[in-house]
Image 1 (cartoon, rainbow, N blue to C red):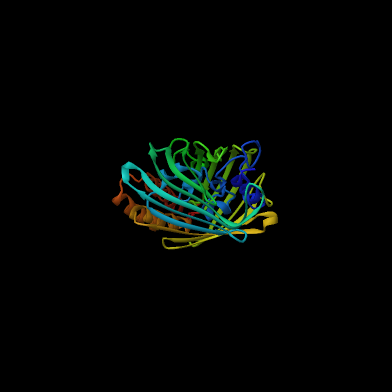
Image 2 (cartoon, rainbow, N blue to C red):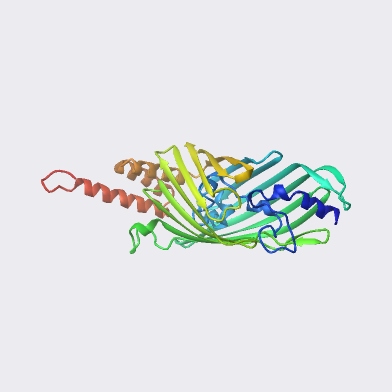
Length: 377
């Protein structure tokens, strides 16, 4: 057996964790793809919600799940995720997004996985000592609004995988779209206004080759839907996930903001590689800083903890818009109108602020109407 392939086989017990199975050009089930660190997922928020992030595309971490999320980013955003798996396995992800007005939003992402203290063997199955495995992905992406309903986006990724002294490199791409079928304030209004639909294709491109063995990429197609209600305080999401090397699965998630500072999240995925598929987490927001945490059951490998930091800055109109939403949740309709008016003064084309202002006006009219007995209702 080739020495480098022997190294891969010696790692099989570890790579089974979380879907990181050993690449094999001959197999046809889970584990037949390479670069499986790309399947780990990013964003403690999305991971706590079961990985249902295709249609819930509203922050810089959502770009991993669907690059069309770039089209929904109105402020500069930066995030960092750290995950400690079993001993010797560390995973990090960093991302940044920069809106460019009418030209859309661009961003960069860096993902790294390092595995240390892996036993290596030569072609004669003789132990050669511990070796290190490193995976890197550097990506740049872009997205924008397409009319009022659509968001489109794409990502290009440079991948480098190192197994001991052997290196392999390739380039991959992601593409996605998000649509809001029923626009707020349109003729077809009602509870469907909070619905969004998304489709994403991830890890398109050639596989990687180690010596004579070549394995395809972890290509997948995802279709999702998300729903927002109570002025974005409650979000529900569900995705259908179809990977190249496995069966289809369903991912569902729920997020509830308890006031302006604390969010609780939960999710479930079917056909989980390890564990029972349940995930939970929370988020804490103070001003423009958000701290997120996710807990995932990994079965025999124990529990996985993901911690992330998310920071938004700049973008005064969007900052004011979020402030106005908070006032609406508290029932302060008149104050919210004043805030949304400030948004429109800075950005007259901010259609969401205009719609929210109309909602507040309708609420005030209802409150001012005389009740059945002449009172105010």
